[in-house]
Length: 60
Image 1: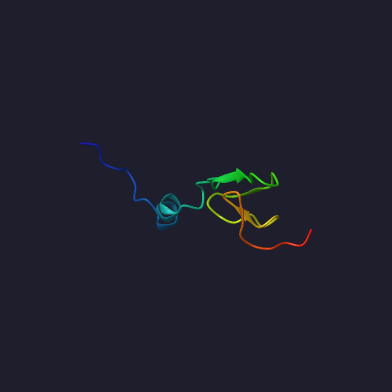
Image 2 (image 1 turned 60 degrees about the vertical axis):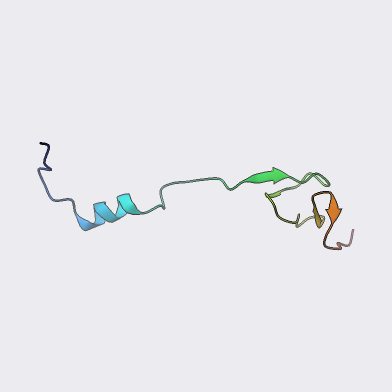
């Protein structure tokens, strides 16, 4: 059976367990109304539209 030759240090162990090194892009989509990129399933910050309807009034 395979056995480690040396003890894994706490720093090396914790670095492996952390999720800092895993980069992931959030779900970004283009707004149907203005074309700005924003997070999916959220009101557009630029124009205030969501799902084709005006949710937040924005001044032009």
